[in-house]
Image 1: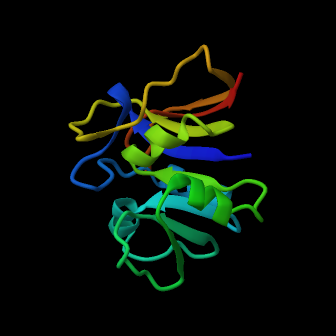
Image 2 (image 1 turned 45 degrees about the vertical axis):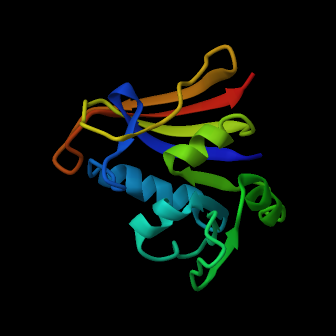
Length: 160
């Protein structure tokens, strides 16, 4: 099962200037728990925004730059090569960015999304979720609190 995991604000906003726009500690904690001990697939710009490999995960980076190196990571040139490199994991996670999500939404089996109920200025966007292709199977809604500034929802979709 190939899972896309993402945090998305209103109007499908993902980020700006290669960074997350919001800080939602509960989502970061959940992300760490869900993806630990799995292969995580990301584009080079997403990796560079993180600054280092994510611990307790096999980091796979997709780049067209044949000279790109990142210690402790597997470097590939396409999403298909990344999927192949993660074949020993029954549930690899695709972490983005926007270009990788656009490719991956065509082949993924599951979407594990955090919707941040707030509008932000963004320059990177998640692809439209086609409800004829994707079926919502789980939704948990939460209100902002002292640690998490925005209302949010954890939503899971599976491919129809």
